Amino acid sequence: MLKNYIFLLFLFLQPTLFAASQENRIAAIINNEVVTKFEIDQEIAPILKRLKSQYSADVFESKKDELWNIRLMQIIENKLLLQEAKRQKIMVSNKEVERSFNALLQRAGGSIAKLDAILRKQGLSIRKQRQEIREKMMIDKLLRQELEPAIYISPAHIQNYYYQHIDQYQTKQRVKVQNILIATEDRDDTEAKQLAEKVYNKIINGLSFTDAVKQYSEGQFKSNNGVIDFFEKDTYFPVFEKVCFSMKHKNEISRPFRSPIGWHIVKLLESKGGERTPVAKVASKIRMAIHQQEYRKKVEAYIKKLKLKSYIKFFNPGN
Image 1 (cartoon, helix red, strand yellow):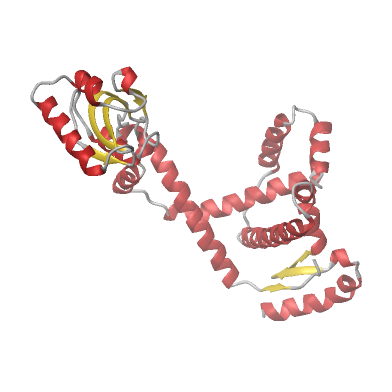
Image 2: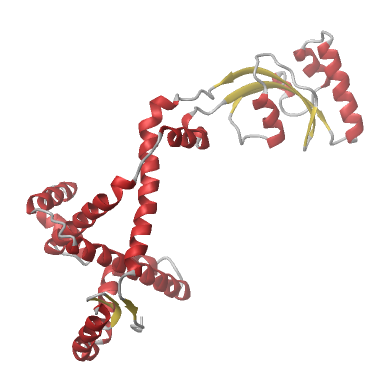
């Protein structure tokens, strides 16, 4: 029945729409509504103006086509949602619209003239802006009504999210170490390893780490008694950092290990940071983050469902 109605609509519109100028050709039909090339061109014009100065002609045309198609799909999805909101008789009062409009007005400095000038640059008007506010609020009400009741976030869900994103909930760890380097630049690897083992055994048997640095270490930190001041991860070689950040106790000394520049023995002087914020303190933020993820997924699924039960026909508008 719907398809028959659409066909009649198309036949009715055909003489006027196809007699119109190139700019007004049909881009798509969504149930009982039409999207024209002019509508899309008008909306993307301000963005295209910026892009044209940033890209060569060929790249610009590619970006234009990409943007054009993205905007077409956005318009289709918005129309489907708005049609469903109207079908369900979702209402938005004038008071609600004005409250949102006034907030927009305040961001423009409280001046209607200034807001009007801003909107005109975007191809909009005050009347069109109020209409868009109403339609957006109708869609938001529809989605909240349809999707919110199905979103449940359990304590276990929050715990899992916390540990999966643990880096977000702990301060960055920094370490200060003392380093002995036996370089492999002027000796072979076996000789360097044997020397490193010899130095390590001397330290274990009573030689102070600082004296070992003075007697055996090489490289840029020797002049500072081998001390490398506080640093975070992703500063030095990964293998070097792995050892430094794995040590837990002050004055802990590593066994000799290899890096791309030689053999090291490292002593942990101090460690700062790395403290975790308890999950209870961030539970509300995590709940919000999970809710946003779940909500987006459900919106995508809801739109897909609307598309499946709707009549959508695309045309080649000669863009």
